[in-house]
Amino acid sequence: MSGTDEFGDRLQQMRAKAQQLEQAAERATDPDDRERLRDKARRLKEQSEHDRDTTGGKTDLT
Image 1: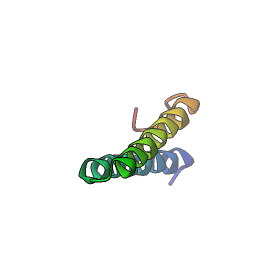
Image 2: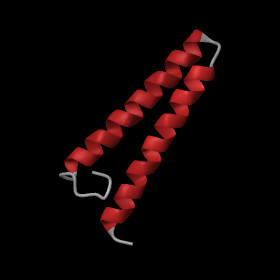
Image 3: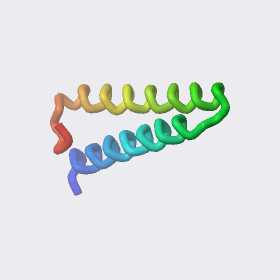
Image 4: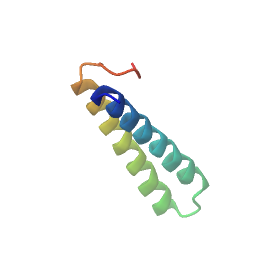
C-alpha cells in the first residue's frame, strides 16, 4: 500500500470517528457530555480537513 493510500485510510478513519462522536452526542442526555462530544467531533473533522488540504488533495477521497 502506498503512502497516499495509507493517508487516505487514516482520513477515512478520522471522519468515521467524528461521525460516531456526533451520533454519541445526539444520544447524550447530559448537556456537558453532549457539548464535549460535539467539540471533539468538530476538532477531529477540522483536523482531517486540514490534513487533506496539506496534501494538496492528492488522496482518493477528494
